Image (cartoon, rainbow, N blue to C red; front, side, top):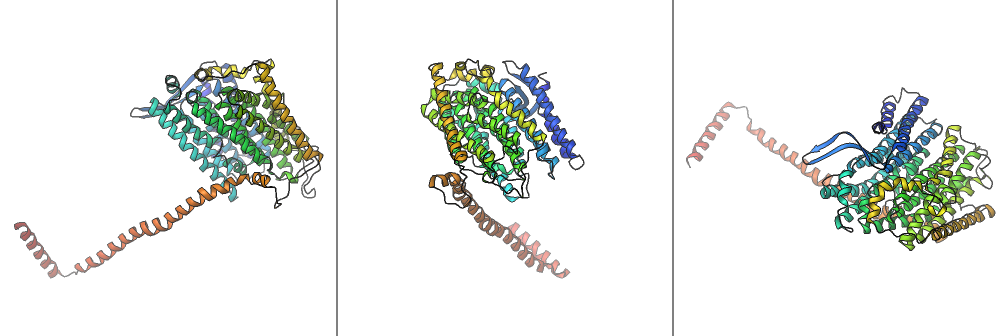
Length: 630
């Protein structure tokens, strides 16, 4: 069965190739069903792998990939508890998003190619998590970047969507440079890019080794780009330009979690680099709070969720930075459930309102879209960390480890949780409560078809009960997911001086504090947006200073544009107009003109007079004899 696991990524690849080749000739329904079937087979194989996985890693050897001098690399897959969980998330949530897309993209003129791109995206993500080396991970890493470019800019006739796709591609390339340099240093240090060679050798290094610290910081630069952390986070909100299923796929189960997977997979390296661990935690918690403050004032339903994703990814990095590797992977799983549900729920709202995305033009939709409302409410409770929903268990485990490691990080994490609950219930209340604020003569809100609502219901169930696989011992559980992942992270944990929680009572107290402040935030949101029926100010309204800063995302894009984009554009124009057009082209053109002028002079030698040719020959011979005798 483990050998059959090698086929998991190749079914989506087959879907991409076949649908891509038969694009014009394949009926819409057949293309959609074929793409879904390919992913369903991969999901079935992933379930089988998960059920049969043991604590020991199994490497599946496929073929020799690169042999150059002393360097060699094989195309092999690694199956262990960590990769098996990511396989389930990618194929399972990805399959539900594929099903949802049948209804959402039904009328799109490029319906078939959309499903081909979805399958390609899943293929590269599976290669990323299955690869047995950093080099093969990098192949999936770059492939995911390419696929996201194709999907974000899918509606390419809108130039702003093209710009969003280019922005995502370029900002990811910045991070990828750091990742690639880290891989090169790994090869220089360990003589290989294979996990099986690097991780055992790494255990012989001293904690705080400068080379390991440099490598881990470079690898983290790649994670910052791919998982949208400060300062390379601005591409992710703009990625909302793609169709809503793309937003769910990128933001929930796949691309943005690649950085989390890479750091978790490299746990033993980070455990040897305390400086890198601190940087990971610091960047994570600052990003979590910073993105949450922006989400507080956004009015585009998808933009709120986008900044929420950036914030939640920050929590995952906080967990990794304080050594809570299992808790971070647990939060990846629960986040995949509730964030996919939130994006697909937002897509259902947008579909029911004929494309409207501004929450100021919504309201009163809970009776018109009942299934969407109930599922969206469950996802909101989950992301807010209300027990017993899935987000409560995973986020509170991260915060408990943060409290044990650094009290300031814990305080910031709790503040971020307060803001998360406020902006999510603000979104819920403005969208589904009160009265409809749109034009009922133009738009008639309606529930989505079953192809869209069934995935919502399944994800709602997972968002509700998914957290019970990680119930902590302080609440009478055994945290099955932590035990399952122990064989992967045990070497890293052994290298770290972990600070244990003082007692189960203190952990319960921490949970109580977090839940209390979250409930207070929900009540505050209810007071503003239900009781007082406050609606965000229309465009152009003068806002208070702090609100204005948050609403305009602290002008980070404008700052980047002024400090980076415009200077680079000016340098490019100088190189184009002066260096290229005048200097280089001038030299090339001058060379041509000189050749033309010299050839013009030389043509006078060709007179066609035989007597002149004979005289020239005699003179030439005389000159040769003269110089020879000199």
